[in-house]
Image 1 (cartoon, one colour):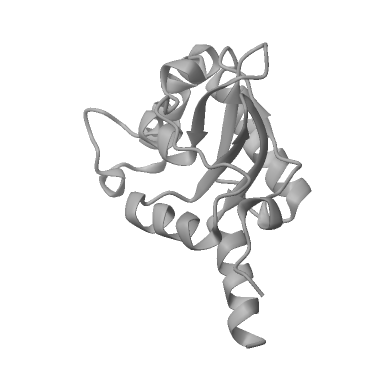
Image 2 (spheres, rainbow, N blue to C red):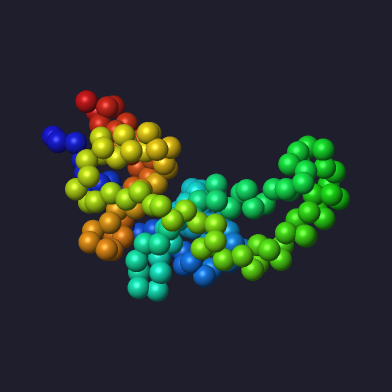
Length: 158
């Protein structure tokens, strides 16, 4: 049996964001998608109005926006200071569009990319998810968990 390709392990249903969405809207979708999937979602593709891939947004893009710039040491802040800080950034989260913080240089794979190549890309580039693109359309998503599960199943039944 040959090693699988992206088309064999990709998820065909995946949550999508749009560039004009705010950070607040994206955060709500992250939580909703995680509840729906039964596991945490740590990144989503960003598609324009024509359905073309324009970026990817991960928790790592959002989280730096949520930490204090002047006092990066949360442990020195008391609960009132944390609450005041969160209130202060609330407006920014409600108005900042994700197109200003998303990663635009997205590494993609095709449905014919072998799982071994996918694993290599993910490990070398420290990537947890790869959009699967056919032509100009995103047709699926391969995650690190998907690759781990596939290879683990193969090894455990070998």
